Image (cartoon, rainbow, N blue to C red; front, top):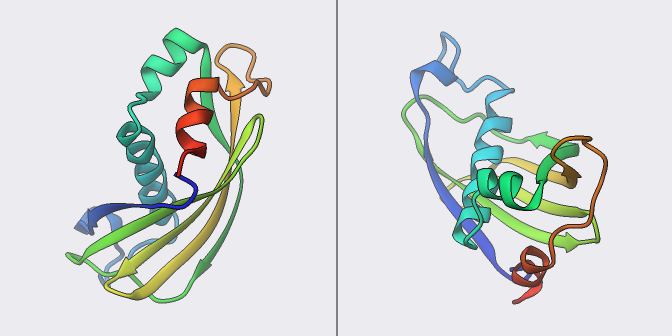
Length: 135
């Protein structure tokens, strides 16, 4: 996974834009969240099952985001997500919103594995870490 990029298509709907048809800045966070969820799902992990069976949830600890160009109403775009670091309790993703080869938004997202009850950091379950560390 650390050598691969996961791609998730996204269409821009009217609800995500302002009167000028430009995507609101906070909507990009939703696009990136959905892509990380689908990335995890593509590896065979459902977040609900992780919470129920492993007692683990993933939360965003920090994010750096750079808005390069606006996304606009009705465009078909792609979110590219690459896992660049796997630690004991954390994952770091590089994510980009793309229109073809043009980067619209670029983000680095740090996600932490926490206990689903106490929300204290816990080790990422071994099975998940193994899948994510496999190229």
